[in-house]
Image (tube, rainbow, N blue to C red):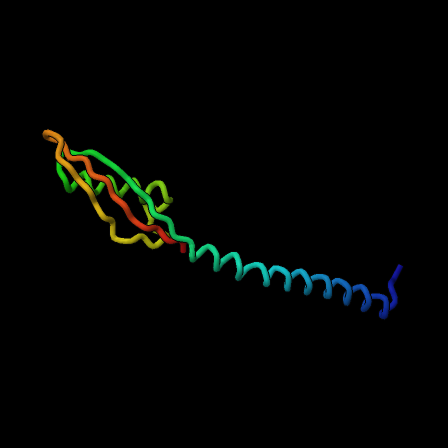
Length: 103
């Protein structure tokens, strides 16, 4: 059975209109969700112990990168960490604080 030319045009026009409406709805939603993701910043903390102060600082910052999904490749913006360290006998314990911004 063949469909008359005018009937095919009506079917194609309806499909095109439906697809255009769907594309417009998706286009309206994407910029809003993308903008909300890039503006989200959180403060994260990490703590570690090591034989040297430098190693304890490195491990404390590494904890922040790991828990935010930025290890082994950094995908987000991370501020320069601030450290608080104290010596405990032959060991050092350091805590790091940094701001992580998605995007």
